[in-house]
Image 1 (cartoon, helix red, strand yellow):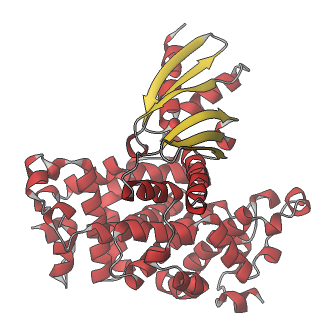
Image 2 (cartoon, helix red, strand yellow):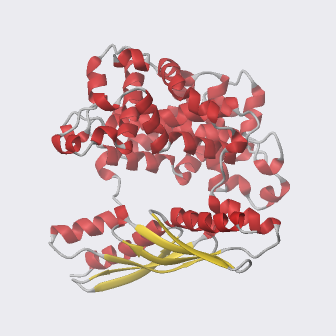
Image 3 (cartoon, chains in turn brown, blue):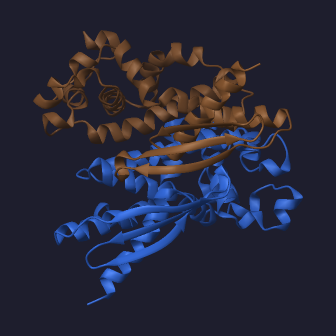
Length: 220
Length: 220
């Protein structure tokens, strides 16, 4: 039973059905609920971190929140609640395994959170939803959230008084919504250069910086 | 009196003081509160739009929210509440007119929202904060939020069955946190090319598309 898994019984089952109905299955689907749920989960996670990490600064809190609400994290919460099999999909999405796709799982989780909120109130929604994230919130710790590779590379070089890395965009391919950036990262000392790609300039640069970091950390 | 302007009296005045204290004035400052307030205002605005615009799709809702919670909008709400003069700043920020700066006003408004929330509860915070945004929420309407220039250009060309625009990155200057992108936008028919810059690739492209749109709309 879904209600047992999620720890909530709906007063208005129509809200639950809408939350579980993907756009590909036709209206009324869950996209508007997903919009509202996105803000709800953001706030609930933000508040938890604010309370659990009384000494963390804004940067650590922001990294922590980003970590917990990113698509793959939300999808793993959705899996933990066995939501996948309950999602109503159009035939095409069903055939291509939409039930297991991170993006669909994460969106449905957000829609479900909004449905609970609309069916009850903020306090009820929060006390229902936070336990879903409890394990993940416990697991991440302010100091342990890994800094991104660009920051680590920068700090590694700085601490050795070495020159800063240079990032160059090699090319950008594809349309706006599915762009690929190819970037190089080079450092003069020790002389290294790596190339990597990503769906944003920043992600591509991080991937390139990560490659340099691996070289730096493995070379003697 | 601030409490009269904002429509809320604090039970814990220390929370109010912290909310009004900028980082430049030293600890305890308002940055952690700002983190929490950011999520709160996001949710409150999202919920209002969700309720006021029952037919708007996710895209319109997302554009509406972005419009209402962007820095300049938050700063204008802060001005409406006369928050500027109440902000505690370090000497440097004070001398350079920090009281009037959009970024400081917007951040302080977010911190104030979080302080009200922590001093009361979600319902109280919402019923205090939403009236501040009432006028702005009324003024924007789903259909009236201007689509960005890239979308308008795309639609303009599509409706005339003309070829899509081509965006090229000309160069990217500066460090990661203060990067400038120079981009060109060109269309084959009518043959036009414009260059523009922006702090992100997307903003640069929008600026270039805007220039093309102006030419298209003014030429006969």
